[in-house]
Length: 127
Image (cartoon, rainbow, N blue to C red; front, side, top):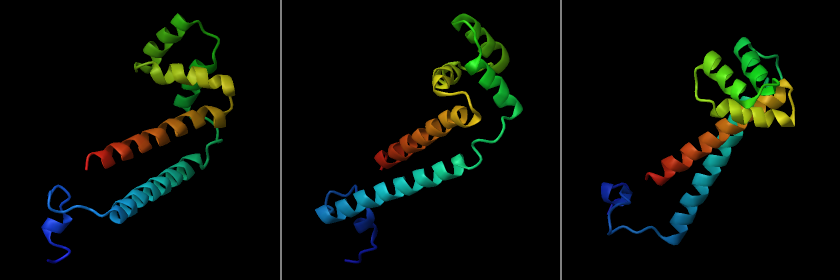
């Protein structure tokens, strides 16, 4: 039987079972791919991270580091951003680590890389 036949490539067929070595190779390839993807994503996101804020980032940073009551903070987020407040509230807590451009932007980098990893694992589990 040809190795490229649809029966061989189909993992849903009960007749074809991967050997432990094949499963281990696939396992390592998936993890190496994930590591390369995450390192590349981090490198691309970290370039220029300490540059000065853009206009919209200034507003978000002000909401994060401003001296507001919790209820005032929610009103400001609703009025100016019109978005769900979870990101802003998490950034507010993150800003306790520091208030520089680098530190505040690092939060978004970490969230995006975690989102990429979650998407990758979700995609892998769907097959």
